[in-house]
Every structure is written in structure tokens, then in C-alpha cells.
Amino acid sequence: MATITFFGAAQEVTGSCHLLEGPGVGRVLLDCGMHQGGDAVDRIQDEEFAFDPATIDAVVLSHAHLDHSGLLPRLCHEGFAGPVICTRATAELLEIMLNDSAGLYLRDLERTNIRNARRGRPLLDPTYTLEDVEAALKQTQGHRYGESIALGESASLCFHDAGHILGSAIVEITLREQDREKVLVFSGDLGKSDSVLMNEPARLERADVLLVESTYGDREHRGEEDTVEQLREVLRETWRAGGSVMIPAFAVGRTQDLLFHLGCLHSRGELDQWEVFLDSPMAIAVTRVYDRWLKLLDADDIRQLSDAHKTSLEKFLPRLNLTASTEESMAINRIKGGAIIIAGSGMCTGGRIRHHFKQRIWDQRNTIIFTGYQARGTLGRIIVDGARSIKLFNEEYVIKARVETLGGLSAHAGQRELLSWIAGFQPPPRTLLVHGEPNAQDAMAEKLWKDQKMKVEIPARGDSIVL
Image 1: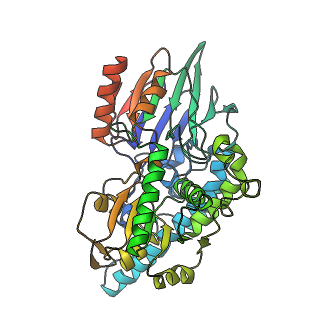
Image 2 (image 1 turned 180 degrees about the horizontal axis):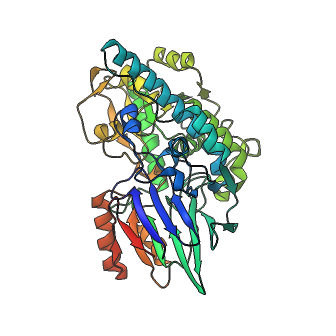
Image 3 (image 1 turned 90 degrees about the vertical axis):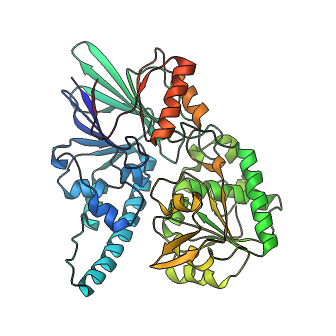
């Protein structure tokens, strides 16, 4: 009999990792993500696999976000040599994501070891290297949506569009034993139905076992139109105050949505004289990947682009400045007002956004706009929860900047859409909630019982179930 063991994103949002194993399928990881929050070096050094990576036959990736893919290099470093199976767009994004993440980690580790040497402390060895990133990428296989892919001796998988980010997938695995079939569906992260650029998540009808995300299982998002109106108003008020806007944004998905919305405001003459800075080498590279895949994205929104802009989000926003180098990023500091700065990381756990906070978070004329979920333990969550000061680069900074959250720009489905998507499976499958904090999962479980008389399970890390 096949089993699934939950090693990450179990009663938590980050670190997605589930092990499927059984006769005919072997040992297959569904995602291999890193946890987010806290110091990057401490976090990565503390990550440990509860299984032997050398015994894993394959990894199936739902999408390229690091909380689903970020530990692939370490998996290879510790002996994994099988295929990494994902969609073609995910494979293209993975090269950017993993190289950028490794570069940041290794630079931070070097700085940590310099401090350790000065203090007479032991030096830390890297848990993985750029060579391990290269190995993971060589093992990656990209496939089309709807394609049947062999998995082990008697199993197959198929990817369906999850509508979350470019290349994101719902994973459907069919296990065959003698004359019986069992279907396992793993939702990955599901997108919103009204998200710009993305298609709606595909709706499947059959599953024996369903693993479904529950990030926003306890709440709804604002509608897209209301969110754009909120963005317009926040920009207008900050412009009048003579301030600048800092937007921590994920390089994949959220950044491209923002560029699209800002381009629409510009085309309607509603962007004042803001100068927009995309201050992230990774986000710049990802945006150019999106440009190559625009034809696969949501048709209704793409129609809003003129013929000249249908192949480039960059050209849609003439006031966009791409600041790839460190020197270009530092030059933004000389601008005292009228700058919209989009920089990573999305949860403020690293990247250039922290340097912009250092320059501007203490000035009440400025505004911070959060555009997505902030996991527990991250700097973004601390600020959203109302902290009055934060520590950056070993110094304390008072938070006087205005803090706003644009919930409608989330790349995740809200409660109502999650419930509707689950209701599409008939008969109802055995359903397990993953990728959510306990309060969100409890609320979603209660709602599923009240509305659909479905009893669901909420596995903890280390729990196993038999298919």
C-alpha cells in the first residue's frame, strides 16, 4: 500500500515537502521547499531532512517559489540523483530562483564566517554550493500541462494549471495496483479566479485523496477592482505628502502583477509623475521570462495591452527603471520623494528591500505596501502585526512610515474559492489540509463541514497516511 508522510507545510505555510512511497511508484517527494523567516544562514543551516535524500527516486514540483523548491540543491548535495519533474515554465524559472537564492545564502554565510573568525568561533561549512544548484538544474525535466508522465513502474502523473504563478501546477497522480486505480491530487498553491495575467485554476472532478492548500482558509481577499482603487489612493496620498513607496514583492508573480497594474494606471493618466524602480536582478530576469510566456497567460487581461506591448511588461510601463547593479540600487537613496521601489524579498527576509527600509522606514511621509501573505517569524509579518520598531543591520529603526496591505493582490485563492474548488470533486475525496497556519486550517475545516458535510484531516509534521 502507498503512503504519504508530511515533512513540511504541515500546520505551517512554508517548507512544502510531502513523501509519497509505495510499490510501483517508489519514493517520490511532492515539493522540496525551504522554510522562511529569521536569519537566512541560521534557517538554512538548521534545515534537516527526516529521510535519506539518496533513497528518493524523483521530486515532483508544483511550482518555482522557494518555499516549494528551495532545498533542491541541498537534496542533491546529500545524495539525490533522480529527476526533478515540473512544468516547462517552472523549469525556466527554477534556474533563476535557485541561483539567486544560493548566491544570497553563500554571501551571507561568508559574512557570518568573517564575524565568527573575528570572535574566535568555529566557521560554518555551506550546506550546499553552486555546484549543487547546477546538479539540480541538470536533473530537471519540464513538461506541458495535460501531458501524461510515467512515474515509477505503475504510476503516472499529469500537471494542470493552478493559476498561481507562471508554470504553477495542480499535480494529479494515478497509482495502479493490480486492477485498481487510486488518484492522488495535490493542489500546490491555487490562484485567485480574478488574478491578472494568470488563468483560473483548472477544475478536476476525481480524486481518492486530496492534499489542498489552506493559506487563506479563514478569510477572503478584496476584489481586484477594489484593490486597484486602494493602490491608486495610497499612491495619491503618498505623492501629496512628498514621500516614496516601498513595495516588498515576490520576484515571481506579484512583481509582474504590480507592473501590469501600474502600467494600466499610467495608460489612464493616473500615475502622477512617479518614477518606478524594479530593484531586483532576479525580478528583472523573471519578468523577461514572463514576457516569453505572455501568450499562455490570461487572455482577457492580455487584450488590455496594445499590440506594441503584448510581448513586454517592461514596455507597458515607460517610467520603469531596471536597477540590476548594486550601484544603481544605492543611487535610489538620493531620491527623496516620488519613487515607487519594488524590491525583494516578498516577506522581507533578505534582499534589497531591507536596505530601502533603512533609508526610509523612519520617515512618516513614506509608505510600505505589502502585497501578499507574510509568514510567521518574517520581518514582513512583524511589521504588518504593528511593531513600532525593527532591528536592521544591528541597528534599531523606529517605524514611522505608513503601512498598507493590498490583500487583493495575493496570488492565493481565498476561502470561498478554495471551498468551491474542493466541491468540484465528486464523490468527495479523503481531504487533507496542508500549507496553512492552524487558525486558517481550523476555520476552513469548520466551513467544509458546515457547507459540504466534509470531514477533513489536518496532518502535523511527521504524520503519515495510507492511501
